[in-house]
Image (cartoon, rainbow, N blue to C red; front, side, top):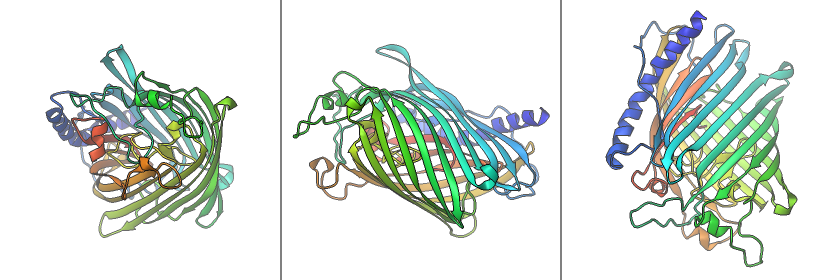
Length: 452
């Protein structure tokens, strides 16, 4: 009990460090947005004084000295003019051991919601709740088991049309209202399994069950596109009703990272296929997909690490509209826009059957210390992201002309807590950010774990 109280005090002290960066960003947002709430999730000021003690006896974020439980958490506090006031908490509970790397088991959880007063009165604008379990050495090391449950509801989810050149039309005052928004509600349960094949290779397979219930606002882009039909008479969009999806995935993994939590060198590649179907079958929603994810980590001197990722996802069939702006087999990722794609580009900004994103980062850890019995590392990163979509497999006027690459550039701060928990806050500029926030072209992201 005493150790748990110390961890709680440590978490409050640690969050003050991350709050410094968020404070400066908040001031810029208020200046740019005439005093209104900011876009993103900031961390609160410290509630107790920090104390730096002697350096840790082990390398922080790597092999633990003894088997023990590690509890880490960070509040989510912030908001913007779209989602209102947002609050929540992210937590990680890990059993670490020198005999089981990166850990014996780990539980991640997130509870988050935002409240705003609008034309429909005060309402909950966004909700995101999940719990994930990871057991790397199940069945005497023969299988890695990764189940999870998720609930998401967003009343301002983004849909801007199909294509890499989909335009945005603003109102006379520069706002867009609900024109490019819809209500997205999803309940998802999944289990991913990873089995070693020998050396750095393993096979991975997974099953996900989803219920997705979208609804459009009258006169919105989604409402208008839902009434359209293609030249062959088929629906222009699919997935406009409540559907139950089953997604079966399988693939190969190549992993030579020196550390899963904070890698300094090595590769982490994934090659995967997936097949999906939905009920009721009258909706005609079914698809197949393939994706390739290549990641590289290279030390470039001292504490600096160069990290890069290439992500390509291709789908075929009758894909629901909300899956045209996300990719991935085992873990769905919003792309090319969003916190896991091209940072700074809003979620749902571009949609198509083929999506690609490239990311490069330089990461550095410049502060290591022990606080109330726990080990910490504070670091920063700078990054450049780029990507695009293709509407279909061939030329399409909705994709425009030229390379059509979208981009985001920015920086962030991250905290490695103990041996298995990472929390980060990042700020990204992109010209596309104004599509969701006309007065402030910056995306602010708070999340657990490194992006890749």
